[in-house]
Image (tube, rainbow, N blue to C red):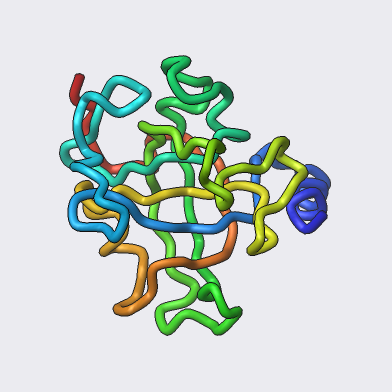
Length: 169
């Protein structure tokens, strides 16, 4: 509901920006899940960024399921704004923001934080979408304050001229 109101307010203000309530996590080399390097051309979109911050997005925003290739969200850029941690406490660096480029999928299968079936559904943190920030691109270090691994805030789709980076195929 919150994301719908934000979108309505932005439309009323004369802009067509797409904004969602979002949760933010991190993955990549050295994470607690044993993930490999996330900044490689084997990411679901078929490219990585060097330099430039990148992220995987929840399947409801990505647009296709695991193993189905590049989804419509591939290559889109988003301004991420973190406001609170997973307990609802204001982040020490709030509101922190970065611009990322989507290059991977956070699959719904077996991953409850990314398993919303539509963009109006929410995960356990009240977010419509999840951005899993690629540690190997530097996105998580730039976004999360020390000791925080999950944040909640909002994500707004932006023109990729606001993103600083290069795609590598």
